[in-house]
Amino acid sequence: MKVTRMVTVLTVAMFVSIGTMAADPAISGVMVQQRWPWSRLVDIDYVLTCDPGQLMDIGVEAYDGSSFLTLPPGSLSGDLFGVQRGLRRIVWDPTMTVYTNSGALLEFRVALTSAPTPLYMIVDLTKSVEDAEQIEYVYESELTNGLWGAWVRNPVTNDGAVIQSVVWTGVTTDDIYKTDKLVLRRISKGTFNYSTGSLSTTLTRDFYAGVFHVTQRQWYNVMGVGRTANFTNVVSQAFRPMENISYDDIRGATNSNPVVDWPRTGVSVKPSSFMGLLRAKTGLSGFDLPTEAQWEYACRAETTTYFNDGDADANITLNPNPWLHALGRDKYNGGYLADGVTLPDRNCGPTNGTAIVGSYLPNAWGLYDMHGNVWSFCLDWSADKLTGGEDPKGAEEGEKRALRGGSWIGSAPNCVSTYRGTAAPSRNAYTYGFRVVKALP
Image (cartoon, one colour):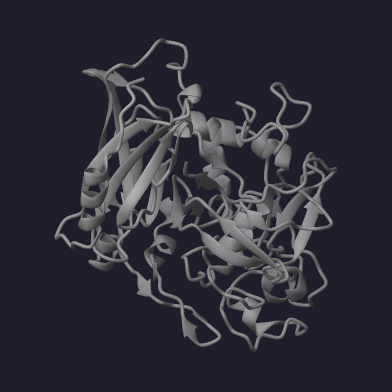
């Protein structure tokens, strides 16, 4: 590895460039330096020049002389996604690549590129990794120029304070986004008050979150065959959430081969599980369930109220509950039959039981059905006490996995942002579903 030194004159020039504004974003002052005292970590410092408040994603290409080097995403960390202007740093860890023991890279260099941060990611589940246009991105400028259909700006206030956001509402009007394509919304890293409001929690990395629960058709497009959902009405089943599945079906089990046991075995999944097959289909390793902290952060979307509508006047003791009924399906607005006590038949249409995804209002970040319809499995083992801090992973072990969001057989208190359910990882039920997230390095 070639070791370079950052001289004072260059450092001054880099800071001067921060205060300038440019019509187009630019990267300058790139310096590559292996850490000293000796470390295998390599710092890649650069200056991003762009408009104030603008967010950019940074691409990295590495070379040894003219030879291209493959750097897996997991080997890079730091200022890669959602980067604001200024002096920034990316860290490369060669121990996570094949180059650790391959000898010195005497002419190691990088080429950095910048691109606007996408607002949505679309995965075509009918295509495989080698197919063209399997993955598309939707940018805010394209959305607000009408290129993707209907959208709204700032649809949610938190106790009267506007939450700045742009939401693609047209995603609910085209059935392809509920069946053959999977749509995920970019969620920016940030800090929030977790659970009861007493746990300051910071998510240090951006991630994408599915705008809907995974539907029955999407499950079939990934799995081909597999478990049958409870609600099988032939007219509506494709657009309703996949349920009657377990945590083990989604990721793999602690007794599977290989062993899958978050957080002990990290983000590994069973190859034949839903997440394993989705990763293989797309060639992207970051697809998974959300942690409890990610789920609640995405659900709240900067609100601090019972529900993610930001209405501080909501009363969760009322059933039927008008606040919840604007946001999702519970037992009192169609989950049960009209008498509120009779369970629907499994062949019922979406008027009862589970609703077609996207039938209710979105939150400020464009996510639908975060309250009610089906419970969402989270990565974490269920624990009596949550922990805050940076990127909490939950308990190291347990007997049940965490569920969030409530379901079509619940009532308002079971569907608020902070309510936590549990399920044995091998158990399936007609109230259990899930939502996909895509981690960014």
